Image (cartoon, rainbow, N blue to C red; front, side, top):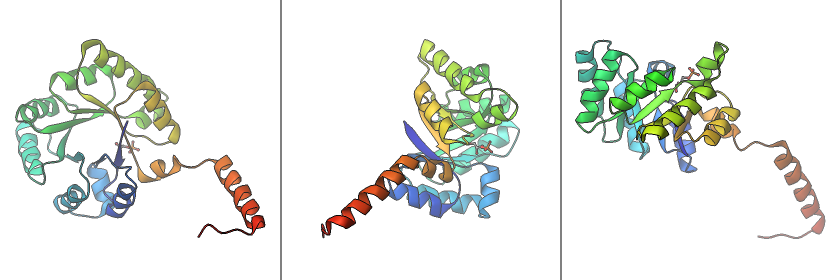
Length: 217
Ligand code: G3P
């Protein structure tokens, strides 16, 4: 399972990257706003830091303009995945750019039918948004499972990138279902290491070790 980090904060990406936990990065207009950085500058810095795919999202809504924006974003670095929304204009952009050999991440996916269209348009990644479905009392994980089944039925090569991940359980469930990638905020990835029994056990080991009076170094 690949881990992408869902942020445009350089320090947070660098910290997890040093731990070998970053297979890629995803950004979107809201995350660029949050970073307070220029999209072209910050995306270049992220691409220099991380070897894997870095998603940068177009903001035009007409295909011609989306394609132009996508080509400009793609020039930032070879590891850019151009991110487009799941609209007909986005799908047209996906088809055009993927035919040119460009990685494309189709985002804002909320149904299995949308995921089928993205795969047929040649998407490298499909991004179903788990948390936002949970927000409206649906089950985001059902969508991941449906897309997994349908993609496997037909051998679609588009990778399922489970997005809008809010909790550590979203990560576990995505892994169980077989999502190819999860993208999560740094705080969620860091929480994956937490367990109270780990903390309790370590406390006991250290207390007992102190009683031995020994040193390793
Ligand atoms: O990966 C998509 C993500 O940035 C959206 O997350 O929490 O705003 O639904 P959220």
